[in-house]
Image 1 (cartoon, chains in turn brown, green):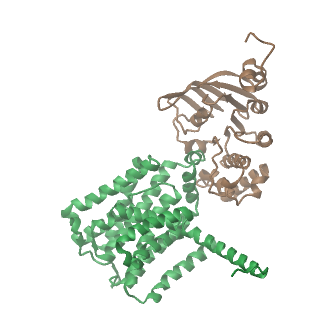
Image 2 (image 1 turned 45 degrees about the vertical axis):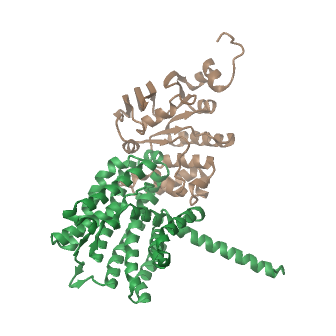
Image 3 (image 1 turned 120 degrees about the horizontal axis):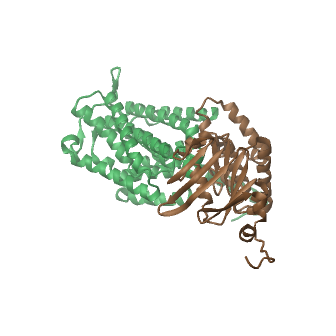
Length: 247
Length: 327
């Protein structure tokens, strides 16, 4: 569904992504784990067109999206939940969700369809419905995260890019968010590319995973394999292998 | 939406009936200026209060509108309505073209660039003496007229200017409550997030910049045709700052706030005549106090003040009931 081939991205002179390749199949949940500054957010921003790639090739449903502007990419069916949630703070919950459907107003689809999708988001996150008229900036971090996911859903994406949904949230709230992602997959068969620092929760949810370090993919595999991988355990799961002093 | 329309109706009625209370006189001239300044501060507010992009050069667009209208009619004898429309279109196109490079800048850099733009336009007015008359100004600009009615008195000009201003209020209210208005506020709050939901942030900023400049040009044309004389001094940097003051004092992101700010800052100097040379100090002081104690501007600050007053009144009533009386 999504294929990223040898992509290089720069911030000015900083070489943020070095020949990164990855692929996602239809209906898959794939996670991207790694430390701060590994390039996880950059790869999402490169896919969504916010920070365009300098070289390499990105294709989505066998169509090249490498040089497209973000709004064109949204239209093709890729929605991003940006890092740090980035809900529109001075707008109400409802207006935030309507913003998610920004490009759909222009097409022939009617407002009724958009409201139906809004109800679906409310079914997924009942808390948002209670607060539909509240300003997004006055909600808790967890609620804002739900809103950010809901907003991305409003574009009716085929692929959802999630950037650290657990960032700065209480463990209980993180659990709730991951439960909803699981439900989302079951109910809609949504394809998800999930960037996470919380490697344990991410690998539990995902089918497959990639491990990034300083701009490169250093490891890839099935989620349960990665979970058992000594290197991953040591670096990202916080479980020191005492039985293997040699490594 | 219905409530909005009702509010606008009440506002329009108030404006239309206002001259009855003043019965001509000098204040009518000032109220014409209130109308023109309302248009200008709404224009700047669309850019600054909604899209979050600052401009310190809006007096320049105002002046461009005024001079285009003035020169085309006074020097070349064009029809005033036609020159007004042409001025609006030209300024809109100019702003659109300048907008692309200039709006790539953010924050202080954008402020500096627009400041420079305003100053360049001001210098052009001063230096192209053959065309604009230079510092001594351009006179003999004809009044607008329609069906044999010439807008040559303060009362007629009042209605002329305010019909345009009210249309602009209506247009801006509609824009603010539309999908585009939401997108503008979204860009203001987080450009990255706006882009990932599919807003072409760069284009939208340029478009609203052009709309804003076009509105300024319209106000400029009306100014030229009502005053019949213009000089560069009205379109300098200080006026750009005054516009900014109106928008901030009235309330960022509020159309009616722009009216309040424009009304206050236009009327205030008239009442501060006695303090003539010190009026700039009062302006500055006012801006400081407003930002400190009414960061939301008059439009949000006054209702809040009213609520607080009611509350403290309620408290004293309670106190006296309880028998705790102060001497």
